[in-house]
Amino acid sequence: MQLLYFAWVREKIGIGEEERDIPRELSTVNDLLDWLSSQGENYKEALGAKDRLRIAVDQHHADTNASIENAREIAIFPPVTGG
Image (cartoon, rainbow, N blue to C red; front, side, top):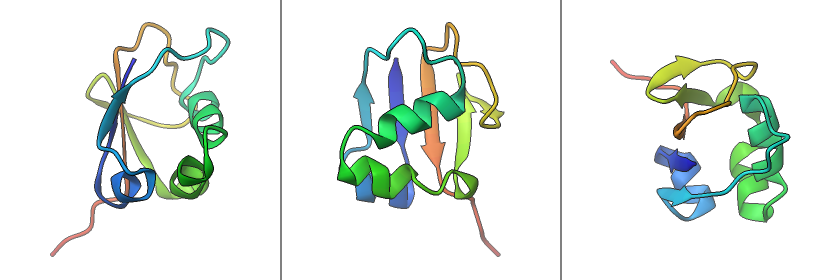
């Protein structure tokens, strides 16, 4: 699965994207975020506040209960603000 990280999520993790083989038992965005948070302190710091993150599954906005079954790409980014 292709994982894409944007803005401060990318900065905290230290990379903008990576290809990962994720465990089959992960079925939702929430499961994925929990698993990634266990992959190192940088991931835990970036992904620990799930309520602050925005997610896209195969380029469609999704919530943390969304299925990741058969997903090819997950993008994780902070909320967009602007003016």
